[in-house]
Image 1: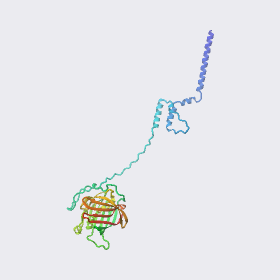
Image 2 (image 1 turned 90 degrees about the horizontal axis):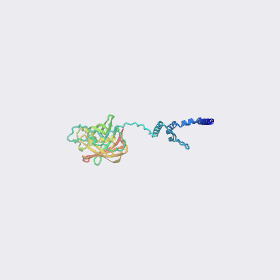
Image 3 (image 1 turned 180 degrees about the vertical axis):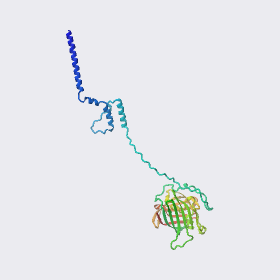
Image 4 (image 1 turned 45 degrees about the horizontal axis):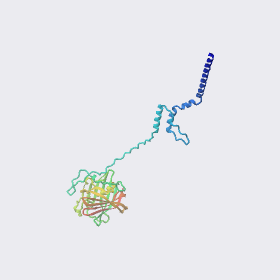
Length: 363
């Protein structure tokens, strides 16, 4: 009996050892299979991290290509998950190209639209002179609106020959020369003198007129004047001129223009520097003795013939003042730097003096 029991235990022990050996052989065979450890290595966390880095720059898959494995199927460690999420968030942000800053160009300073303020000092006025002082020139807006189109820019020299007509029946009473010059220093001069044609007898006292001044941002500023003869007075005056020339000073008169205000003859060149506005404007005029504020308006466009040039297109400006029924009419040629073609003055008594251009040259 004892031998039989001992034999059974030995048999069970052998069977257990045999089963253990077979199990070891089976596990060894599985573990030693080729590619087992490389496949396990691919299942680590390095592969998903690599997929996350490449994903933002991946190109579009070609038709028929299987979709990439979802990142949710890959198990990441806590630290790698945080790194992957940070990279994906940065990749998901839209890239906005930064536009380089454009260099700022310095704009020229704007010039305020004002005229030169008259000086405070005034020469003593004779008893017949209007003594009320004109307000500052800023109130006489010379260009309140859009200027008319034309050839702008200052010219240095103008030579004009003209004829003078007087009376309602426009009788020819003489001829004259108008000369305008300016220099680089901002000075200008106007010279007007009588011209006697061949066979014309000298009528009355010879006449001439000289005006000089400066050129400012708002145009001409007359300073000095010298007048001799009755015709010169009629070309300059803002009041009635006696028909009897003996009533005028034999040596003429000279002096300073009050506050640099424009005179009627400098007015002929003012719009070369400041083109007239479509809506009109205001200007102070003076003859050296009186001064008034005039309002001008555009009265139309007219064709005109200058014998030396032929037909030209002119604009007509009409100047009037509330202080007097006096009127000044001025025809300008926009295509010739707004130089004059004709000017007409009607005084308070209705006496007409007209200058008509027959020759015009400038440079």
